Every structure is written in structure tokens, then in C-alpha cells.
Amino acid sequence: MMKPFGGNIIFLDRSDINTDEIIPAKYLTEVTKQALAPYLLEDLKLDGFDPKGEALKTAQVIVTRENFGCGSSREHAPWALEVNGINLVIAQGFARIFRQNMFNCGMMALELPAADIDALFALSSQGTVSCDLDLPQRTLAIEVDGKPAQTFSFHIEPFDEALVCAGGWVYYANTHY
Amino acid sequence: MGKTIVQKIFDAHHRDEPFVGTRVLNLDVVMCHEITTPVAIADLETRGLDKVFDASKIKAVVDHVTPSKDTKSATQAKILREWAQRQNIDDFFDIGANGVCHVLFPEKGFIRPGYTVIMGDSHTCTHGAFGAFAAGVGTTDLEVGILKGVCAFREPKTIRVNINGALPPMVFAKDVALEVVRQLTVNGATDRVIEYGGSTVDAMTMEERMTLCNMAIEAGGTSGLCMPDATTADYLWPFINGDYDSKEAATADFAKWWSDPDATYDRVLNIDVSALEPLTTLGYKPDQVHPIREVGDVPINQVYIGSCTNGRISDLREAAAVAKGTRLAPGVRGIVSPATPKIFQQALKEGLLEILMDAGYCITNPTCGACLGMSNGVLAPDEVCAATTNRNFNGRMGKGGMVHLMSPASAVASGIAGRLTDPRSINK
Image 1: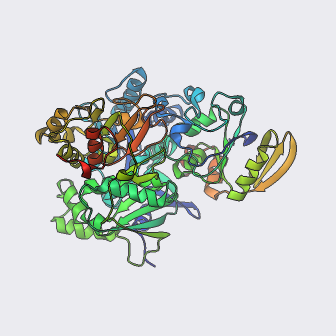
Image 2: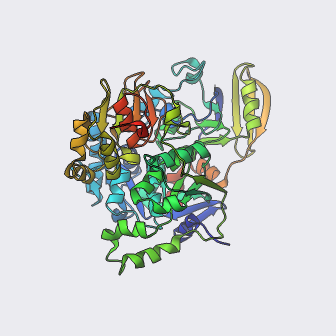
Image 3: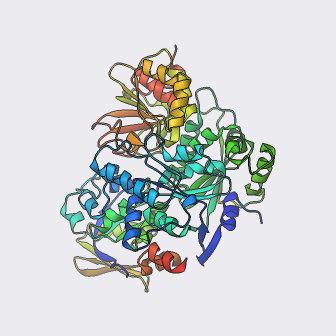
């Protein structure tokens, strides 16, 4: 079953946000995904960002820069996003393991060119930004304060799309191998 | 057209190509530890799929938090322990026999040239030192690996890193690993494998090659590999002497995996290490690398020697050689964590632990421990550690702490002076 992809965007204006920042290692002794919920992005130091603030609490989408999710292989990073209602991360680039973990969980790691990411960040100052992703149409429609603002097209690898549509790698692998 | 070692390994393990550019590989080894495996086990149980594809190909260890520090870590160890028993996994290593996964499993001879290896741990790239394709994965990839013995990867591109020249005194494999990350940057090898070659790599021991390959992930690399050669055959000989008539025969067989001379590379990087200096990191990214002599006055609170990067016997010898007859500076804490019981015993036998204890160091049991801020040396806010580990991320070794990555010799030198110190400047 496919997850919904879209909603309010929180902007994290930094490259190389690592999985230790997304979910610190000291919480890796938790054995349920739900237990990770209060600690999402707890160690991220970024001007204007508050891990306990409204912007993160009301977000369903993250927009960020290069190499998001680098470092540790911990799937606790996508899980911490998922249990906070965030199924879509849009970035200029991802670390391989994080990106694969997202698709393996049926979540979406969307790569856009630098110019599109710049355009998204430019919109962030104009009001409350939200988006809706249409996978079959390959479009990402952006709204600012509820009004249509801009539409981007995107590319997704066919295998990654198959994982998203299957609801993740375990479902896919169990029917194919 | 010629093929790289990784293309040859992919072809030999081909299971499926569901879409152009995606390869599903058969796996030779699936390695498990107590942090990332319990959720996979629980999910398999929930789905009614609590089984393993081949118990002999699964290796498991309790290593990240051991002995358990609290109820939660004890529960993780218990889940892994009971699963290993239930699934008849003979190669399960618990207290008394456990050590850091990427040091313990090679020591047991589990990794061979041409193998495909996954683990729910990003430093799995370490095992590429044996000429294997070894990749860190998340829990879902691990779960499917356990259940089906397969894993999916994008068709690999390769960065060839030629490393040439003799390493100057007090410059080590760790310094080379840091230099490679500096040049490639933290995402320069994303969706790539790094192939290390050249005279410096040819001359390296297996332990040095493991240190080098260990940090491929810090440049974003899927895996880091060395060509399997006579050094590889020599290291593996106790485990393969039933398979080959001689080490020479093993070496000749390993050569089938070597990249062809006309293989295609995404990029070629040439590094001359003959004038390389002892290096360290400043800041929170592993590519923020500088010669130690240029970093200025950086006082430290702790020295940490251990981890899958630098917790091997050669690292302890290197540390003890610098520490011999010295003392940690007043106010500096020193922690040594030999990476496996075998290394611990060998260091004891050689008197290395006595030298380090005389210098003021605390010796811990083998564990990942403080490297990721789990136990056995977590930093307080604003504290600074000279560490032989692999990651200097913000909060990595404890919230608000700062980690400077370096070789064991540099870490010990820094402990003697109480500040980041080039080991060449220590006069004894």
C-alpha cells in the first residue's frame, strides 16, 4: 500500500545532515519505531531550527540540500521521520544507504537539481509552503499559503518506484525471490 | 571491454536485473549485530517469516553495547542471542568471545576474495580489504538478506584511487584514509565503489588495508576494495589451507578477481604519500582534514584508542611504542579498547597493555562503545577527544562533545602533550 507524499514543508538549509543528527545513537537501543518519535533531529544545530518547534511538528515534507542522511546506516533515521508523519524528503542529493532505506520503507527520497532546490528555498520566505507529489505524472506541485506557486518535474529510478508502489523491499522481495 | 573487480563480483553473484541499472545479488555472508538486527527479527516474526536463508552464511555478534549497560541494551542482546539459538546460527559471538564486528569477522576468516557481504552497519566497507564487495545497509535490506539471501544495488561505478610512495615515519594507514576522504569529500564517492591500488597499498598489511577501506563510507562510497594478493592469501591461510595446495596457488586463484587493465573507471585519483604528514580533523565533517602541525593550540580532555578503524593489534603496538615511558598529561583521560578478545590477549602477552596502563590509560573490554557515544567513554558537553575512530559528527561521542580523528600514534602523542600533537614532535 502506497504512502501519501505531500503536505507542509520544513526547510533545512544545510548540506551533509547526517543520521546521527536525524536520530542520535543513544536512542538506538529502542526496539520500536514509535519510541523514536520525540527525538527526531534532536542534535541538529541550524539557525532558526527548533527540534521541538511548530515547523517540525506540522511538517510532512523536508526540503534540504546535498548529501542528506550521510554517515551511519541506521534505518532508525527514516523510521524517526515516518513516525513523525514525514514520508517525503526532497534534496539535491542523498547518501546511498539513507536513500535506499527510504525506498525500502516505501518512503520517498526525491532528488531535484540544484536550481530547483534553490527555487524551493526562495519560496520558503514567501509564506507557508506545502506540496503535493503526483508519482504517475512525475510532478511536484508547490503551494504558498494555499495558492498554487510552482510545479516541478522529477525523475525516479524504476526500481525505486516499484519499491514505493509495493510498500517497500520486504513486500517486493517476498513476492519476487 | 575490461571489467573492474566489482563488476566481476556482481556478475558472479547475479540473481536478477529487475530494471536496467539495478542488480539483485546473491549474498555469501550476512552479518548481524544487536543494534540493527532486532527490529528485522521482530518484523520477520510479525510477518510469520521467522526463518533464515542459510544459517551457515549468517554471522552474528553483540558488539555495540557490551556488556549490556541497561535494560534496553540487555533486551537487544537477548533478542539477538535467542534468535541465533533458534535459527541454529553457529557463528554467534557473545560476551567472552565478542568484539567489534569489522575486526572480529575478518579475524575468524569469514571474508574471502570475491565474496558479497552485507551488514546493517555502515562500516561494512572495511571487508573490501579482502577483495570482497562489502556494503553497509539498513535494517530492511538486512531483513531481506536474512530471509532470502539477496540484496539489490545500483550498477556500480568505480573510482580508482592510486596511492604511491613510501609512508614517512609516524604516518600511517589512518592518515592515508583521512587524505583520501579529504580529496574525495564527504559525498565524492556516493553511488560509487572505491578501488585502492598502487605501491603503498600493495605494501600494506591486511590490517592497514582494513583501516583504509573502513573509511570509504566517509566519502559516501558503497564499498572500498583492494585487490586480493599474496598478503591476502597469507592472512587467510589458516582458513583456506584445505582449499589450496599452497599460498602461491591461492594467490594465483585470487587474481581472477582483479580489475582488468582496460577496465573503465568513473574517475581516477592519484595520491603520492611520500610527503604526507600526520593528519587530523577539525569541525564536524570527516573531510575537514588538516596536518596536525597546522591546527594550533587545541587542548583535549580524552584520548580514545579503539574502534573498527584502529582497534587492531598493530594499532595497539603503534600506540604503545609512542606511550612507552610517558604519562598522560594531567587532566587528560586515556581509554584503550582492544577490538577483539584475541587482540586483547595478544596485547597482554606483548606487554602493550602494561605500557599503556603505566602511561595512565584505562583498558576496556572489546566493544564499539564510545566511538558512537554508547558507553565506555562518552564525552560531556564541550569536552574534546583525540580519537582513532572514524566519525567526528556533532554529538557523535556524546552531546556537545568534539571529536578529532587521527592515527593511534597521533592520539597518544596528543595525550602526552594534553593538546593535539604531531607524533613526530614527541621527544622521549
